[in-house]
Image (cartoon, rainbow, N blue to C red; front, side):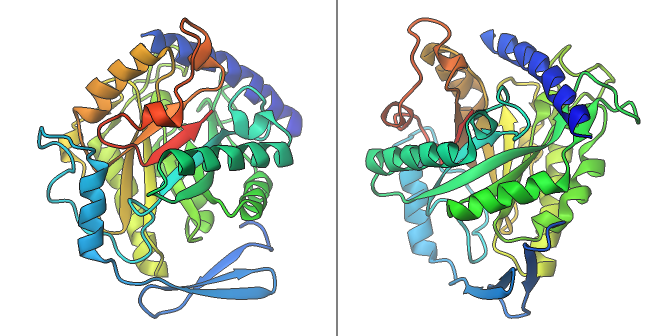
Length: 350
């Protein structure tokens, strides 16, 4: 089984080359969640210890002021997005900025999460957290591990869906590492020839944990049957609404704090009908600028596909290797990213 996953990762690495070129353009017995019926009270059971977390009601005045600050002086009326719902208690955004390490533990080529030995990776993440805290001391930083739980592949697999689901024991490992770093976890899905309605429910036993959130990657959503890596895929607002509704249902059923939903994007067609995306108090939606390249190219991607099509919150992705391939061979610093309007509240390193 391990050999199958390793071969999958090698195949995906070749798909990553396509993604890069385009830009040039519980199950674990030690981690179980239970909930109480009391509003905004979540009981988290880990091994034989139980911790009850009580979330205070949202201070709407503070929330409004932070959203205004997040707009970073934008005068177009786009930011902050009007008529968005106040979150239920326990919301992370905009009270904190999330800084995440992305990847897969089977591969050193899919992101920093799997590239370095675990302790070295966590130490490096801690350094980035400190840098962001220094760059914007008014906003606390929440560390995160963003793990690719369903991987698009060049290998069709038994069901010919060209994606492989990672074993739950690896998710358990990520949860263990996240606990060491006081980090939250994102489970990311690349559906390939499958679909989000099939893949999302299979991760439910992790998504009912208050510290676990979700990411969906349109790049590898191949709705027309094209194999992953041949072109860039797409999600419609309808797909995003399905995920938001599903997560909302879990939050209500298990009395959880809001889930953060990450939607990756670096082209217009990756997300269609964005104006039809529905927002919920139980879900905080982040449109994550997923493009790599030199600063000027990333600026254009941000301006046309994130800033100009506002949904709720924004994210910005930084690539340790791909961002420095071309002149001026420079990966943007936190100080430079913070010049964006609006301020990105989710930062991902790959």
